[in-house]
Image (cartoon, rainbow, N blue to C red):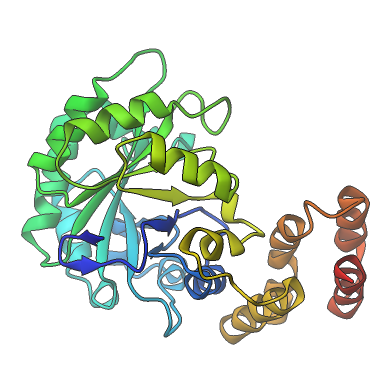
Length: 309
């Protein structure tokens, strides 16, 4: 399938997740069969003003293609400058975040706050489209706190503003990541726009993914937490099993991280990924506690090897 003029490797893509979809995990998921990867959420303003942390989020491996960068902003002029920034030019798609529920983002009028400001949201997308030849996409939710937005009209407006595709998370801002995603609303959006819609929410395994793609009008699925510790899900869905063993994947994950970051940062940061890699192992809670208390990586590696023997 295509988003604008960009051909995806499959209709199952990796969702951006703050703190998880760093360069190493994205590269692994692409190798496993993800049709598209997207960076963690990047501040358009931070990019323009040269934030070191922002530049780190834009790292990528050679195998990561096609790839998208996700920006957040509620200012049309800022987004215009951001999409023309040199660091963005290596990405294939620009994704605009209108779904982040985190209070510090929302209180500044960005992320899911844009759902209640459709005209501002429209101007952001129009400005982005005007200043880049790359396809522009939008990530949205189906509602916000205390009220229900006309999510279909909002999606149509994003389409009319120039978006080439929409990803819909089936929760409201108020739900954060709790409760169940409303796939009926996702499906309703997919039925009422002509651009590709990627459904997102509660896709925890390949069986659920296949059920969602077969029971809705979504052209694709955006898989987030279901891929954590489980990049194999993309191989299952694409019919090309990812042959690497868990220990091979963990070692590769670590090796890529060490290319870009010092060990004193990598090892603590990897603990959250280890928790997902082992979550279905027997006594995973005990094992997670042992990993968190381990004093060095050799000790962690031995614990993991024993777990996967």
